[in-house]
Length: 329
Image (cartoon, rainbow, N blue to C red):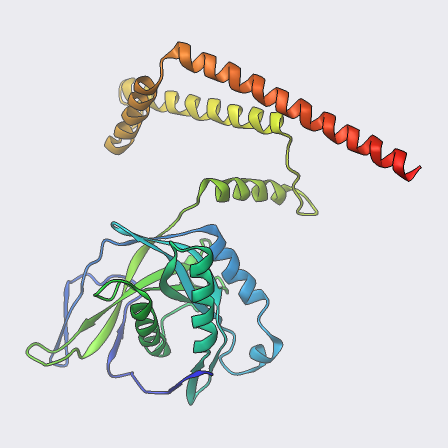
């Protein structure tokens, strides 16, 4: 079963902006457009980018030969927070785009949403992505489809904000040296006094890279592989990881101390109020939560426990190897 949409020409009723216009109101041909400002921030996690790039690299040869099938489209999964949208996962869906019609595999999309909800109940569809450098008239039809799908899947009475994420896989345009990712939020506009909206406006949103602690560790490991010819990275042992983490913490503390001294010493560095509040929160939390004597005791006991577990694990591994050799002999 496929969700089939006939092609409709929206060239007269679609207004697109690559960047927020300067005036809050735009007038043209007797039509007044009001730009709805949004303070939403779209936090995209690394796994989303990897899935999109993997989908683009694995697209079928038949779709590459077809007209306009250089693109990949899919559903964004995540959850809503106050002032932000967390995009934590995504998956591609089969679709067909030609000059006459648009075709989306609705059954596949619904099955994938249901499966991901079972594995991650906190995640829900929050939007869709498209590998393109710009918004086109077809995006309005795709967006209407996702409005229906996400509204039905959402528990809210009102339709939640639905994000459009575009990724330019050709790295063209003014973002050639940056990650070419843009996010949009559609808003409706119309003629004053008219019964319904006359057009749709895709307003750009702020996009930031967010990562969970586990994702951050994976990114740091992959970053080490960039210096290798074979693009391989090996995991360090437990004590080596502890040593690296301690060295990084010392380096961050030294950078923090250098910044504070530079601000206090005749204003060599400009002060930042937000940075100062964050430093104050760190100092307050560290001083109130635990006394130095308790912290020292906790570190020593934890280190001893870790060394004991590591020793027992290596001893067990050695015994298993000896047992395998005796059995095979």
